[in-house]
Length: 322
Image 1 (cartoon, rainbow, N blue to C red):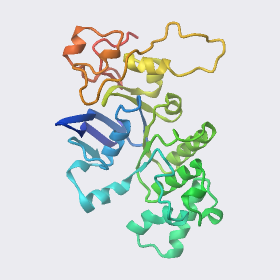
Image 2 (image 1 turned 120 degrees about the vertical axis):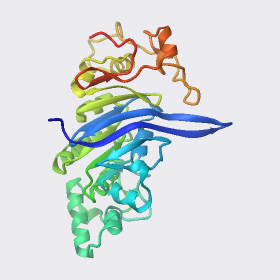
Image 3 (image 1 turned 90 degrees about the vertical axis):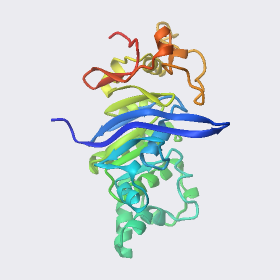
Image 4 (image 1 turned 30 degrees about the vertical axis):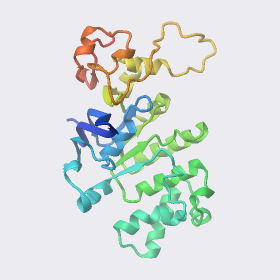
């Protein structure tokens, strides 16, 4: 029996006006499913559309086309109070933990804000909930409750953001590069915290990142984006051991290995050229201008995302032999 699907994204398209009648193709025909309890790692270079996809799922950016089905409701077809009601079940953690918090409010009010909007708890019960959530994310409520965001470190601000996101007991948590702005030691703490909270609160997660080492530690499956499109999806083990798309292979081989005996880059794939324009993307396969395996058909026909083995899909005319 296949696991229950909590989220289904189909043919998602997001564009932005670029003047002179042109458009930025930020997200192009993206489709994927997320099972209950799964963590999907969404990876790719900066500017590939990862964060835009996450925000479009939340309807913070309205997609031009496609559907976002969350627990049976298509979010692209609702708006106003109905959208806000459904969106209680899905929350987002932003990349910059400090700028995502209101600098004029105290910690106790920042974390309690979701309760103020959506519940009618008495003052004492309200602060009991805030105190409990602070304990869950490793903050001493009594000593920090009256501080404002500028009085915290980046890691502490991210803990506050996580606590606020969990106040309404969401089922889906979208993490938009939640550790990229933090020191390496703090990154490990936040990742461990997310793993613990995911298990405790039975969360499903979309973890957006460009650091493949970070994604490996937290994701059960991975989707790779390039120039607004998904080019490969697989479970985490398959992704790291048997990549089928040349771009995926190049990403994996670009990860530094902390081994002084490994000198040079012989035999590793290296990409050449610049990332193509999102206003005027290449015809056919978007990756062909940087791909060492590109042939004539790649310029004519855009490859579709097809399954090459159980749970492993790739969009490439010439996938890497396994």
